[in-house]
Image (cartoon, rainbow, N blue to C red; front, side, top):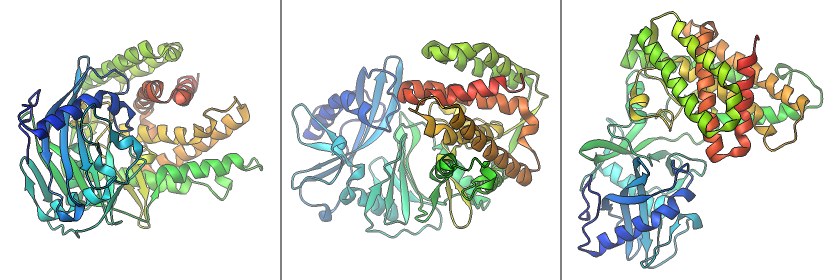
Length: 478
C-alpha cells in the first residue's frame, strides 16, 4: 500500500495508522540521522524532516507475521538546504531482527521500528521484486536487457559503505541503495550502462534498478550489479603495501621490497585510461574553451574562500593556492572534456583475477547534480587517484607523534606509486598526464581543499593529510 503522502508534498494527511507511523518516524529522524555513516549533512543541524513518499513493500509469508517493510523518502531541511533521502523501515511484532543497535529508530509513542537494510529476512524481497520486474505503486523494479536473476538469496550490507548502502545477495549480486537522492537517472547507472554497451572490461555489469518519481522528476533509488566475491579492495591492497614498507628495517626504497605496489599502480593507471577511452567512445567528448577555463578557476577560488572561512589551518596556504588556481586561465585552450568518474580513489577500485574494476560513478558527494553530470577533464580522475596514493601513504601517521623519518618514507612510497600510475595511464592513452602539469596540479590542489573541508567536519585528526599534501604541492620547485 501507499500512504496518502504524494511525491513533493510537505506533510502527511493523518487519516490512517500508516500515516501516523510515518509522521512519528519523521519526528524521530532529526536525532537519528546524524548517527548514520551515510548521512551527508553532519556539518549542520537538522531543522526539519518532512515525509515525501511512503510505500509498503510486499514481503510474503516467509518473513513472518505482522511484518512491515516500508520504503520511505523524506526531505531533510538544514537551514536553507533541503535534500531528499531514502530509507527502508522495518517493523516486526514476532521477533527482534538481527540488526545493529544503531539501526533502531526510537519513536516517542509507537512501535519498535528500525532501518531495515541489515535485515536479511526483509531485504531478500528486494531481489525478488527485481527478478519479477515488479511495480509497487510508484516504484518500478526492472532488470537490464538480458539479465536473469536467481531469487531467494539472503542479503547482508557491506559495513564500509558511507554515502550509500550496498547489500550483497548470496555472493552473486550487489544492490546499491542511493541514500541522498538526485533528480534524473543516477549518473552511476547512466555511465555503467554506457560502458556496458561498448564492452568495457573494467566494470561490474549493471543487472537492474529501482526507480520512481520525486517532485515530478524521475529518480533512481537503487542499482543492482554483478558481485565479485574474490575481488581485492584497492585501498586495502595499497595500505597493506604501505604498512609493510614502513615497518621494513632495511631502509630500502619501495621498489626494492617484496610488497611493492607499483606494478598494480601501473596496471590501475592503464585501466583508468581505458575507462576514459570507453566513456569517450560511448558518450562523446567536446572542447572546453577559454571561457570554461575561467569558470573552472572561479569555482576553485570560490571553494577555497569558503573552506578557508571554515578551517583556519588552511589560511596560511591561501596565496600559493590562489596562484596555482589562477594559472589554469593561461592553460592552452581548448581542453578536452568528457564524462569521467568524478570521485576516483583507491576505495573505488577492485582488483579481480582479470584486472582492475572501477566502481561508484556517481561523482563527488558534495558536488551538485549539474557538476556531476557535466563533461570534465579526465585529469580530474587522475588527480583524485594521485590524492588517494598520498592518503594511503600518510594514514599510518595519523594520531602519531611527528617523525620526520617516517614522513619521508611515506612520501617516498606515495611518489613511487603516483609515478607508476601515471606511467600506466600514459602507456594506455598515449598521453602522459604529467605533461599537463599546471592543470593536473590545480585539480589535485582543488581536491585537497575539498578534503580539508571534509576532514574538518568529519575526522579532525586526519586534517594533517590534505594539509601536508597542499604544503608539498605548493612548495615543489620553489
